[in-house]
Amino acid sequence: MLVAACAAASLGGCGFGPKAIEKTHGRYAESVRRVEEEQLLRQLVLLRYNETSVNFDIANIASQYELAATAEARPFFVAPNPSTDIFRTFTSILPDVSLSGSNRPTITLIPNTDGGSVRRYLTPITLETLIFLTQTSWPVDTVLRVWVERLNGVPNAVQASGPGSDDPPDYERFLRLTELFRNVQRQELAAIRTEEQFTEIGGPIPSESVTAAAMVEAAKGGFEYRPRDARTWSLVRKEKHLIVGVNPGAEKSPEMLEIEKLLNLVPGLSRYDVAVSNRGSPDPEKYPGPPAKELHLVPRSTAQAEYFLSNGVEAPNEHVCAGLVSSDNSAITEGLFAVHSSAGHKPPANAFVAVRYRGYWFYIDDRDQESKITFALMFHLSKLDFTRDPLRGPALTLPVGR
Image (cartoon, rainbow, N blue to C red; front, side, top):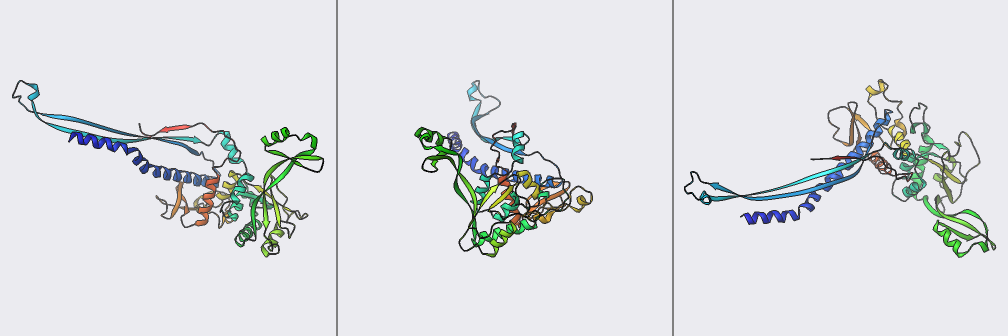
């Protein structure tokens, strides 16, 4: 019996590690997802109240699995001792086997309070990221409403993407533009795509100066020499450009004509280049100018996008009357993002994600597909580093267990 018990314990240890992973991997993933979603929702709620928060990134989870097995034989002694021989003081042996397992995770948390994290939080989204978004299946109107501040001067609730402004936001024309772009996308009238173009860096350069060694050296830096005419060359760089390509026959469609009018574009073109700028063009409604052949957009940072979405957080009447929140601008996120508030000891049963703050539950309705899509987009893009800065903050390691 003892030999069989020890053999069973040793065989169980061979499968302990894989079985432990099967039982804990999914639970760890679910816990991390829930914590980070609650952290993002809490951030949006705090911004609605013009308050700051300290967030933590879960950088690492190191889990140690241990399996311990022991076996012993316990004798039964007979009293009083019928013999002087000590080996005859017991008549039977009781086998004892014990098997125990343990899981000791170590969680590494990094606070987002260092200079690199703050710089990432305040840096506008890059053109590369916008190109990436155009190649995915995210709705174009959702991307534009969340991450674009101005489009050819047309404002997208600029005052609502930051704190401390009570001016009425101007967003109706931009909202109409996003609806038109969504219809254009559905009807395949036009498409936002990337196109490789050569940008001249330097030139003209005499042809006798462009040697094989010079071409190799230029290629190392991502450049190349291209003939400009019969006697000169140019140093160029291949870059990806974002364009709006109008499909043949769609130039006269009502949607494209309205877009061209709202954005003050030259009508009837088959393509419009998209340029990213920090300040953008003046509002064509206030400062009319000649029609343009380009779309100039001003991107938002993660901070601006979160401030914009925080307008969709519903504050309880008690907090509104007490002056704890600013004016209600929830109309600018209508059909895009909404967070409801509810009193009670438990979150509502229909809550997709919920956090408790100032005695109320703030939650996203599980049936609100638009808000869930927008929340997912914000959740993923807030993880990206638009500055490409590898700086990280101090690590806080919490051992769980002994």
